[in-house]
Length: 409
Image 1: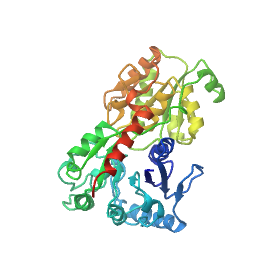
Image 2: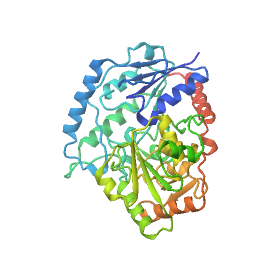
Image 3: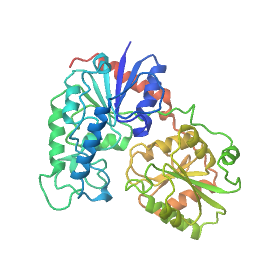
Image 4: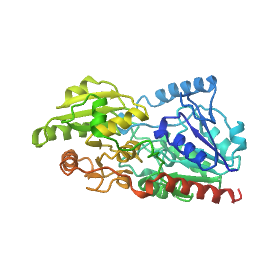
């Protein structure tokens, strides 16, 4: 029996991708396990959590990361240079595995030395890229910067003009590390990141595959909108626009442009009785005051309650300025709710313009407003495309695993 182990900092990070893949592998007869740094209430079998000592190391790494990044320019998002971590290469789950998957392993989970300890095992290591970090000198999204194609230096994250800054060190470290091993394989969940990885000096000579993240559409599915609204105490006559993010004011998530779009909607639209649902973040007075419509903050929702929120909405908006394969887009489409988002990153993979949603021009808040109105007026329904069906995605993983197991390293 094939044995797979997946490493992920927490079960719920990266859109729960490791957990969803774990369940899918188990259904297919693969002996799957997950190693997670942070503990969770998830009760799935074969999940191993690291010790309290590892979590202390993670917190110390966080303090070092905050110090290193104290002067970074925040509008560019996150920059990571892993310093501390835990050696997991001697764990039974790792030693017994035929294939190792690495998901989101930063945040004091693994450092560069720990990553190399896994590479040295001469097992196939599949790196699932949930953002750009694996192909850059340290940024998680480069926005308009293309230095990762040749060499990161004088990074926009750091003020001043330094040729050999931390991004250069991170870039050279990855380039040297990847070039030493032939057992590394990269998966991109989006065609956008797949193209980026093929251009990056770090990964252009490594095998890269396009396989979207799996989603369980037996759980995320449509049901009666009026029932969903009754549960959330929403008037059935309202026009409901939903928006979700763990951090509503994240530099990646485009809140300011959504605010502009809502202002335009208030000023120009013929739509009546509009209300806003925001989930993933608790009440924020500044955001509440800035929205010209009645607003409901639902806070963090589990998979069951978020399904109710998607079904209660007429349209879901994802105004991301940088994103890979946003899980919320897939979840909303599975629930039959159309999605409006910018034509950026992996969002165009999932949205067929004016068929299951609306692709707005990048950073054009007026077009976001147009998209909201178009979807509502034309009663556009969400649906996932065939390439995102779980059976199709799991087959691509199984085919890759079988191929890699037959190779010599």
